[in-house]
Image 1 (tube, protein in one colour):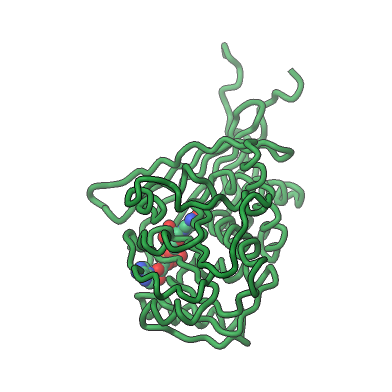
Image 2 (cartoon, helix red, strand yellow):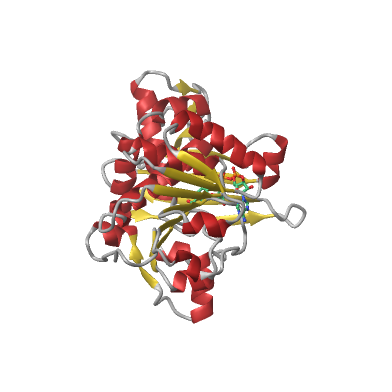
Length: 343
Ligand SMILES: NC(=O)c1ccc[n+]([C@@H]2O[C@H](COP(=O)([O-])OP(=O)(O)OC[C@H]3O[C@@H](n4cnc5c(N)ncnc54)[C@H](O)[C@@H]3O)[C@@H](O)[C@H]2O)c1
């Protein structure tokens, strides 16, 4: 049957992924926006993520995110991402990942991509997209605060800067002084005009910031006092488990996907358990983008993105197509070998 051929199988390295994505923040944010709209319109399949945990390594996990994307760039696939926080002390990143892309017609996997960069990229692009849409009815924030200053925080800053944001002040808070020092040296190169302040406690950072990004590895809430948010900042709650339910119950809550976000002891999940309902949720980012939900300027807004596999697929397909266009795909010629049914 026409079109039903075994596709070539390629392996795409981290260096190739980075080459395809670097400096293209605006394009990637547009791609993520289009993917959220597709998801909102029901043209995706995004089952719950599966968490593999280990009794002998309780801080670590590997998550499987299967997904299917419709639309013009349709593709199926699986992201398989490890989080081993102890790696950081040994000098290697916490997260490592691969993404498998499957052909729509045959189901054949046609590419495996290094995916820690894709994951960080889609996470940061989603944060920058939310920062834009959720601040349209309020003065544009110029005081950024970052709680947790690791790799994801760096990508979020890169995506904010790459989509036109600049900040008068940038506050940093992390339990690890080394992380703060490393982030300072990144900012000295990336945004030398900003006044950078290290905060010993989250309270002073939160009170001094109107755009706050949480990118820690905290498993339970460590920010409890709604009064710290009296100035109604915009909060990108990327790490999902930093804020006590009381903070959310006092804020406008926007998520990427309701069913996904109310799982795995995220702060929205804790708020649902505390109240016994979902009334504290105002809607999804797609609801905001489509004008179904408004974002009041005088209230704290918290965006909690669970992180959807369909975003990884969209960015992974973009990378695959870019590398293919440049003629640099490393095809493994004999990968699919048993191709005649009866030999
Ligand atoms: N929502 C999503 O789609 C999504 C996607 C990717 C990553 N993430 C999350 O982003 C987070 C950050 O990832 P990363 O790769 O940057 O990790 P990382 O290990 O590079 O950095 C995390 C930093 O947080 C600091 N930290 C831990 N607890 C803290 C606390 N209570 N207060 C202040 N700082 C604290 C650590 O010292 C570390 O420097 C992780 O929780 C990860 O699961 C979310």
